[in-house]
Image 1 (cartoon, rainbow, N blue to C red):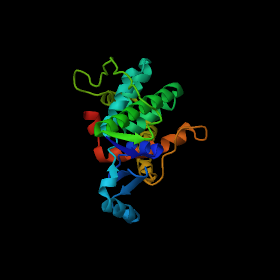
Image 2: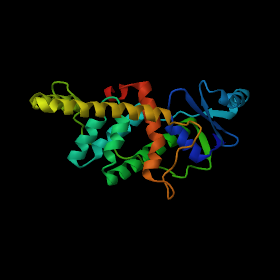
Image 3: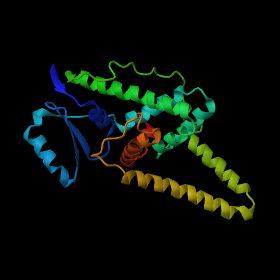
Image 4: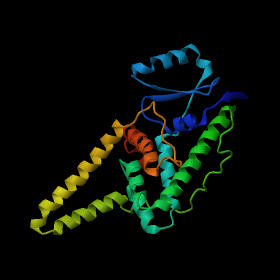
Length: 252
């Protein structure tokens, strides 16, 4: 069993990052994490270091988008409030699920905090299992120690109706039905408002793609950072993952 040096803050961040073309490596001698982005000339020196000593650099396998989507599903099933549970279920249906899920939780600070802890436990379990499966001993040991994952929820999420419609499909039908009975004088205002909502969603996605800096560590929750600030990096990676994976997570 090999012992490898580990810089835990950087390693934890690397296990969250699964954006296309981004790869992270642990220098087993120093614990340094090297982040390499495909097509970035400024990373050529890191590529050279890794290529010269491949046996000294261990490539990290982050939690996949599909797995992190499954974490959201598990959390939604664990929510006791039926109204919030239904809202979250709708939010994770289709493209943009990661962003909408977090937007809903902004109005529920207690459940939002529980989500942070829930997700952290699952991420730490993923990291611990990865080292165990490789037969490697990290030095120092992980600061979170041995972690017991949250139990699998017994509640089954009603993802579709007998007709095969999902929650978002039902809502779209309801919105269309409302539009059909609006007075003619209100249709212009309704169209303007719906276009605003559509464009706001596109702007959020494009903005998230632009703000990911793969060489900057994500901000961690702590006394000097707010919860909203801490979410910024995760949102960027989540949206990049969706750009790559589309809606495969929702279908799986």
